[in-house]
Image (cartoon, rainbow, N blue to C red; front, side, top):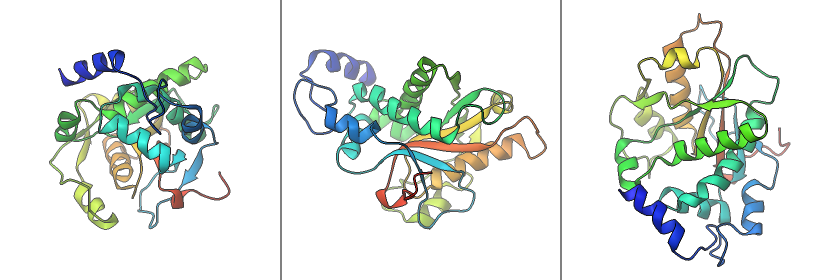
Length: 240
């Protein structure tokens, strides 16, 4: 009901830019440029955790980009999913360029906890992943969204935890759903999320996939990751 109400109110309430609040536009030109107007970059958190797949981000997590992400995730501005999906699609293209890997392109969202999804009324990462897949398909890049990861145990709220604490909190927390292994075994997997901070969530997601599929499966391509945003200091200067 909460998600349905947000969809309806988004149609009837006055529209304002999700980044700066400018009236009569869901995303102004300047905020759109900040979100997806630059080439996606390779990002590396410091310290970089062991097991982190290569990660590309569309934009630094600051100013308008931060405002748009928070508006979508925490305040139910569901209309922001389309521009966020466009930004994520750019990061996916950088993480998995055309002609690389084997099999189809598979976007695997990093799952949020049930508690977080219930509190927000929607699954932000999955919604953005679906928007990104649509953007990629419109650009003649076949892909699918496969939400095959799930929480296998409760975890503490990540807010306020340091990098090592986050890794310990998430270690062993995810698993692949029954039947999910066969879906991802033959494709080019890109883990996707709205935001990377320490990289702990992506490390755990990659571990869960590799553990389910096993090292002997030759049909399983490499795992990479793409996010909408990451801390500014994690961006590599040479923009790989």
